[in-house]
Amino acid sequence: MNKFTKEAIILLQNMIAKPSFSSEEDETALLIMQWFSTHNIKFESQNHNVWAKNKFFDASKPTILLNSHHDTVKPNKAYTRDPFKAEIIDEKLYGLGSNDAGGSLVSLLTTFVYFYHHENLKYNLVIVASAEEESSGQNGLNSMLSIIPTIDIAIVGEPTLMQLAIAEKGLLVLDCYAHGMAGHAAHGLGDNAIYKAMEAMDWFKTYQFPNISDTLGKVKMTVTQVNAGSQHNVIPAVCHFVVDIRVTDAYSNQEVLDIVKENVDIEVKERSLRLNSSSIPITHDIVKAGITLGRSTYGSPTLSDQSVLTCPSLKLGPGDSLRSHTADEFIYVQEIEEGIQIYVDLLNRVIV
Image 1 (spheres, rainbow, N blue to C red):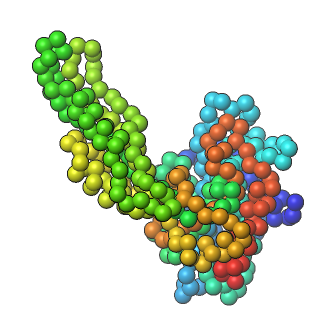
Image 2: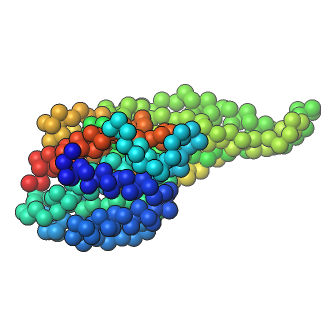
Image 3: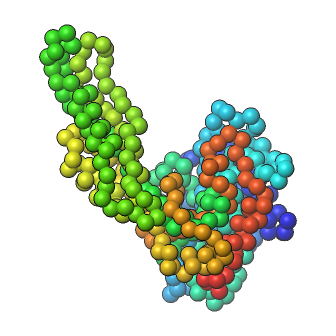
């Protein structure tokens, strides 16, 4: 294990030991600020987001954002280990947030330090250790985009086994309300809102969006919650249900919402339109550089801070997405070492 990896592992262990649920990341933010100070790097912070730019930042050059988050979900009840005890056993580093996305964050922080003092880079580097990613909160990366320099390309650190996620599905959540008229079930009077809702649910189940993404496939709509009725003998006047829609780069969230409203005869309210899909062309230099390093490309079904970016973005990081939010979360030490090396090799091919 080299010096860079050892420092990254120690930082990650210290972060795991500090609970950092979304909007409660003050202690891990302090650790990241201390990391920058130790390496004599000027930084700024806001709402638990910590950011810095390379020493020889030049506003006339394009800028690459390096981003990952330091908040976590809460540990689930299936944990058999202390989620805040960072132990290395059989080359696995255990602890909440180790895989999602602590391994990516410390690897990116290490990569940023590696390039910080380089002169005459083709691109500037800006790094943001962001808050509130897990909750898609208002004080996360989205709140920093008007503060940091304009970004031209982004590498978002999430567990991808260091493969290149060149596209990511967006998220659109709909609250749907079917309205009827209450009445006594024995008399059959009234207008049953559940039946109206069932007609709309059938459309959500069967409709196929015509545009299919090369990397992400089809838009997927799933009814996930239903609520109606007050007692057995009253025909319900309202039925509320929730639809989870995973949007590909073939549509914007607004376009999907417009299609939904054109096809269902119920009230539809969107919770947010800002979590759009994202992508980067496979012909982009940073993707081609990754391919030359033996990395494969794919489309990711999971949401990340890419959703708030409007520039081309690549999701790439150590660890396995299938371990995220699981009990006894872990990341292999070797994955972090490999992650740092690949990040450095990738950027060497693009910015040096």
